[in-house]
Length: 392
Image 1 (cartoon, helix red, strand yellow):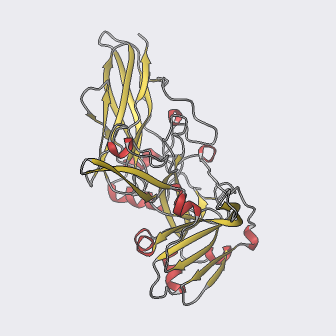
Image 2 (cartoon, rainbow, N blue to C red):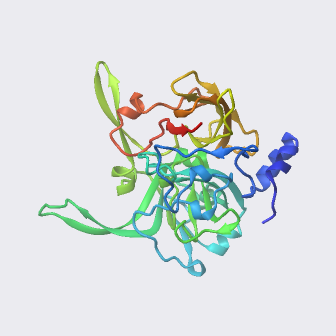
Image 3 (cartoon, rainbow, N blue to C red):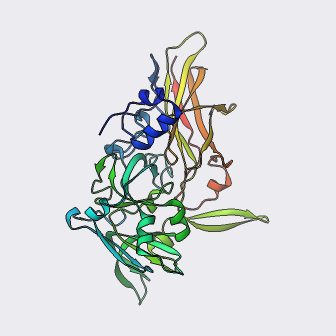
């Protein structure tokens, strides 16, 4: 794949830069470079990255290398041969379809730049690296469904994977039932039209790996990873809600809302990613008579709504505006930011970022109701304080 350096992109004008970005994103795009004499400061309150997940402290590329791509599979990793692969389009359509991988690849191609995050990422200090950025390649779903002809009354699109598992219903009762079911997720017809998901077979110019969904997976711009069904086998158009385990019971957020002096719990299905920022790295330079020159670097992402600002706070002080990288930028991808924190005193410090988007949404703290009253694991988009210690 042709290389396009970050420096080349920055030197280009805005129009040519946008064109270059739309045509090609290379792993050569790097995180904001550390200045001369800068040294990373380890975090005191965060464990080192797990294998197979993003290593925040060494983040150095806008697109994520394969060895740092997280993979979650609830029903195991199926064996799906590319040479015999077929995608079925069925249900409330006028013309059911079956397409081989070659037939899919013969259709109009599209690239989708997207940051993909696990819905459970950030639920604990030991699980914050389940996010990565990619250039996906495939073909648009919407024209495929238009070709099949969606019938009147259709309301929901269901995506079924090749991965299956035995589930037990009414467990422990006389009517206990064991059935083999496939993994599936769904979205409304309106959401499908608005998001125009991608049927993808490449990531960053290479065929999908088996754990990552080979040979074909779904990519839904701006939605959490659970919606991006891997090992895609069948697309069904329905007039009723799909209630599979990972749609109707799991990956449902239960959150309390204060109403008239009481807390009422509301259940919502996980879909669009929430606004989130994270400090990836803090650096220092040699101590001066003014203190220790310190900088912070990080990333911010969400559902595709433009980012208005990222601010950083040190030790509970005033919020300071960070600088957002102007390039590379893409609608559904993270943006890197950096900030000069000035000269800090030797000792322990707490540094945290918060993001605001153009809709006015602000990344909450862990104490805000939207997080504090949440009873489930998912959608942990709170601010993440980083604790460090600077030695004189």
